[in-house]
Length: 99
Length: 211
Image (cartoon, rainbow over all chains, first blue to last red; front, side, top):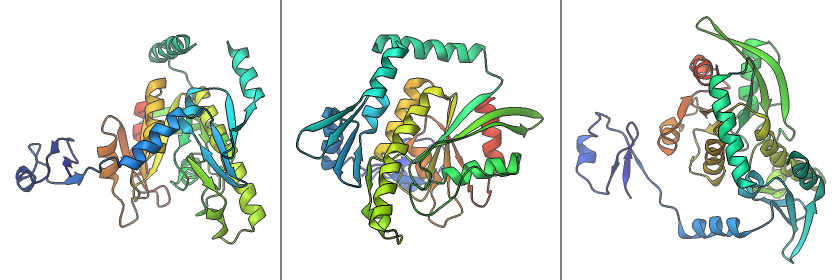
């Protein structure tokens, strides 16, 4: 895994001897940079494809699609996994008013 | 619509540069249990003597956004007047099972989950009415989360002034440097809202960023 200087942000490859000497900026603290795991990336891509802002997985269990909530005014609620959706009308009407 | 929105955002950013409001509305955002209400209470206790909400170790204690208007902060002879909005924690998954371990009944836990979900929506809707953001992160946790990255990206797109607060530095495994390295393009202020450590630096940074 690559290392990043905590002061200036320069990235050093794994096993780089400069990590032992310290960074050019004088700092000698480095961080491991975690790689985005394949599954997490897939989950993230899936989130973008979904149209709903909130999914009710089961009573009391919710999945919230923050990206959709941030980019769209209207709220679409998905009911469990069987393709049923509810559209929150007040949020849609409010959007039209703003226009 | 997208183009109109982006023009509106750019225009409001330019307007903000030239005509700074005499009162800024600042939202306190972050994931659940980052210490948002503890920070809001700290700011209010320091400058007004009262509090805004209940602090709790149970996640999603704040489920409605709370507004406190006209908080005067004085730093280095300058006065900054702000409205503070303490928002519910933003999460991508809310499961009532997580609340059961705190001794809640199933019914109570389900109600909490429902209110917390509504709280996330309310928090996000508030973004349209704010002039600046304090984004609170827990220094003991990994900052590379979907919630943090998404919120930072959206605040950047809106052109809102942002300060990242690296909270809980009183805890032994805190690493504010990790937050700094995750978001090097933003000012990160390490503090402990609970103990008041480094809080003066936060006020100074707020006066600089929002004043």
